[in-house]
Length: 102
Image (cartoon, rainbow, N blue to C red; front, side, top):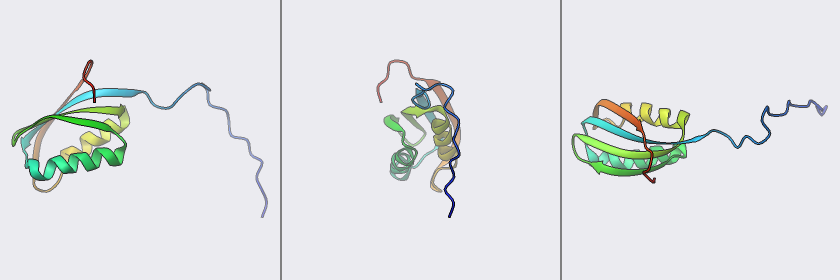
């Protein structure tokens, strides 16, 4: 078995620590079964490595704060739009969260 001595190119910015962390407020609207959806949100955020905190939850609206790379927040939005079978998500609104801690 031959060992490759291929050199991979150095990163363009050697001080790059990975993707930028963004904080967002996500509002989920629809017919929401909070008993199944809230634990689902917790598990899905953990799988994606996002920090999250639910600030409001009722049968029509869930508001949560998220922190993580924008691509993973996008994935969280997609996951929430599909959600568990017991919910019907009509709309998801997102806004940058400036002073909220997650």
